[in-house]
Length: 332
Image (cartoon, helix red, strand yellow):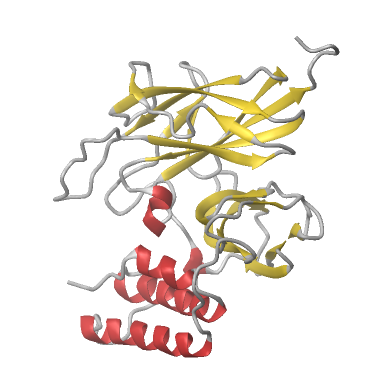
């Protein structure tokens, strides 16, 4: 049986700096081509022995570590690096470039407005990227759509955090093609809807809805979810709900406080897209510290874990745009 290096290994390598990121790309390409029968040809003779595969990967990692010393973790003051997850084709012939990020701070969340310190070019600086950055690795956060004739061009996301500038190019290299709507076990992402009757959308591109409120009133957030409840062959079916939800601040001028940022999806019966096995509803509220325009991110994960545990399937995004008006004169 061919060896397969686990996604957490790739994730840890990618989080450790530029040299490790080169190892990450090499390893990912190696895995695509030689271990999973990717787009390029295997060498004559077929498979490569497991010890050879692991030896090459670990030797490359060791060499990278010698080039870039691994620092201890920091609570604050560190950079935020964009992460290019890969690309996938859209039904209209265009392509989606999928980005996440890695905030190297253990405790410091940052707000970086769109502009010179948070830009996606060409075509930006605003191409829907977050302006609020949670700590640590955040998988598959948003997509940038590029045209059919994009060819060998690149899109670059540049972030300057705590005075440290980083940028990551993204393109249509065949080694970075993703399959975010179905994995090798036929698992598919959860569906998310903002009403019991839908529409329901799955995958990284997601959908959005718009709400309004006036300070200090919170907004109610109602989410309907559905999933195929798929498990890998031979795996034990988890006892947890088939869909878990996480809500977070994506953009906005102030602080957002959720009654629960991980509201439970309680089983609920409604007509959902095939091949749904589990259907549920989750409810929470969000309060805002000051008026302005906000965007909340909704992430729905199935049993494959957050960000598909690095394999880029199977989870779904959605956004809630909230217009928060100032309190009426004289208060209440």
